[in-house]
Length: 270
Length: 165
Image 1 (cartoon, rainbow over the protein chains, first blue to last red):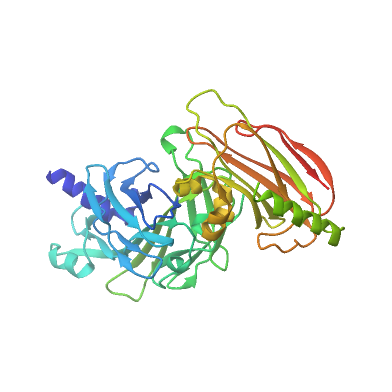
Image 2: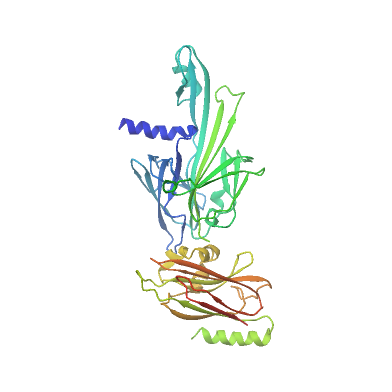
């Protein structure tokens, strides 16, 4: 029990090490109904292979942005050993955003005089310094924030939930997620604190890496406007990952800020 | 029959008053007999898109009476037209048809009964079957340039014969 808990904690906190991809995978990306409400279920997990259930990644923190501007929570959550599951009832036409809210975490490494290697602690600099033995030096603190998100549309596609908040690394779909279709160019915009990010490396991996010899991924770079253009040739589910890092020389508490994003999306058939 | 008669009258009027602009497209659509596996009647959408792939008018939409939840599976038609226009879905819907031959026609007008701009268009037919497959077939054409064509059969569509005059 203790082991699995620490494992879960490790997965939660190890984003800076980029050990695992994290994702929310909804059962449906697009649903149609004239009944006014539809249930959708989603899995959350962390894994090295796209959409293989591996490490539990709790759904407790998941929030849902509704098309009419409200923030909601999952209706029910199942916490498993390899994944979490949450259910949610879509009640209004439009596009919902399922996401982990952005929460900053810190990771500090340091050296101890007379000892080999680098020590690491999942804490900010002040806490790490207080706990470190005398003679510890070379403290380096990386703060990390991450977004794990996906979009689900009931009937008509709306754009309100696509708008960025203006904080950290963000992805704004220019092509609506419900309109990403094989053999058509899709456009996504990346911003950091609301400003376009140029030269950001963006990786998009197709579902099913376990059953291929090659991961089948595309690596793209954002242009001066923060735009990434790509034309998927295959319909299916994809996981996008991008990471942005800033180093500070003038900040005594944080030396580096890493901001990452994971987006699950579907490419529709033509 | 109720629908056909006014349509024919309308068509006659169109011809007499807009002899140059109102051509008619006749679409002979065959839904093939499928004997393998579970058979459900297919969901069918027939519509026109312009050269920018924008929906112009839906000619036919056949689906189960309680089948709104399956409309998303007529994927392209749903994305282009259905999801944003509940009134269109309600207005166009008619029941699914068994395997057989069907005649459809299009009078050159958009969904709101205005003549289309001159230019290039595409006729699309999307056929989706539960426990079965999905096929999307297309035929490009130029507005008011007559043609006769056949769209080759696929698993879910038989030969589709088009005459435009």
